[in-house]
Image (cartoon, helix red, strand yellow):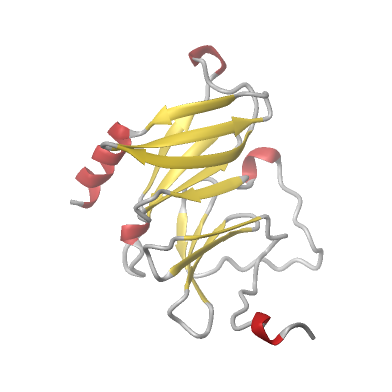
Length: 176
């Protein structure tokens, strides 16, 4: 069964596809993020392991889990339809998600069930603007001075950095 100091104490079921990324927000005690097809936001304060939000690759949000009725283990999606990676900024209030050549940001401060989670598309890579020429596969984020520094890694063999100052100002304007 395993060593007694490695006891499973929670399980998160109901993903519509294989789970490919898991991340936690240490400064926000209620959120665990998992990616199978979309991003599931879980409330860790609930003993029932409840999914409180589902964030889709399109930027839409839904309260609770998305129910897919499929008998197969994996739902086939086109490359731009799934979330490849997620990161949470150091302050624990923003989720960055990579899907295709787009990075979207969701604000964790708007996770009340009665309020939609704000999503802003911050980074659309264009071939002519110096962006990636292929899908973004990995993300990293750090905070310097007044902005997050987002690092993207792509199938085009490049790593790029983006300063997100204007996005953070826009989010503050939207949520007050």
